[in-house]
Image (cartoon, rainbow, N blue to C red; front, side, top):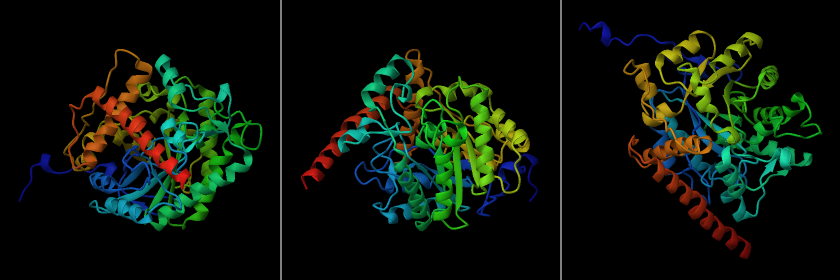
Length: 445
């Protein structure tokens, strides 16, 4: 049978496999389901469940599927319903979760993103257990300040001021990351992605605005890198040679960060590359203090948020066969844009977030030539823009994940206000009371 030319799937660089430099594991193509916080775990046990299994079977076409934020310490979370992986976790549930990813045709890599929130931990997570968030430093200069007048109010109302970690506490935190990675491998996951971006603890140590220490973990860019490098080394030591290890870092913390911050990131990339322990490096940006960062960065167009900086990395950092593969995530909406950044050498792989929320088969359809552009939704708020616009965008898309986890389809007509109210009541009222009752009963016991 002779097929019309238009019916033939044209070759694309996105479908080419890629082999990682340290683990020597091969990913079947260049598309990654990016880490997206789901908020689906039970707020007491914080194990994966049927909702996770249902959700993660749906992302066809990706060579790698990353989990959302998995906390390494159950007393420190960025969401009451985060999954937590520690020695108290039920590994059978993690195995089932990983197996749900491996059940996708092509058997994509299952990568667990491991994280510690540091000061970005709301009272709903800390107050019921009488926990104070931790950070590199404390005091007014190091406090978390959310944008706008509404951000000021919410930040002071919903997040406790953090205390500074003592140097003797840091080895235990490093060990928590190593333990989580070791347990992930035992549960059958292919690797982990260490979250060193978006203002979480490891990112806070890297940031001059959050880290005002004068010991071995602060005071200079090199010293601020130390904790992340120790975590990478510990994770690699705690796992087998064939286990994939990736790291996510910020190119900038805020849109206003200048060339000095970019130069620091270049030095960090050089330092991480020299370790010869990392398979991929994901470039990102922003934190809770500049939640509009990605909206501003989106002006870069279809090439994604961080392509320009990645070009500088490739040009100025001497990458060799042992250097980590570069991943760009965020802002990609077209097949042409994804192909262009890889063909130009700006990156090796592309991470997808919102396009595969609204269409779980987006990656598969791109590879099959059925679709060239994602159908995404962006909220434009007329007031409280600095805080509400990004928050509502994030919560609205997280709510879509909840629909998918329930076996439903994404809903393009989902109410934004309903989403905000449901999420707030769920996390800051229901979960707060539920966890508060549980913590009190434990104290009584």
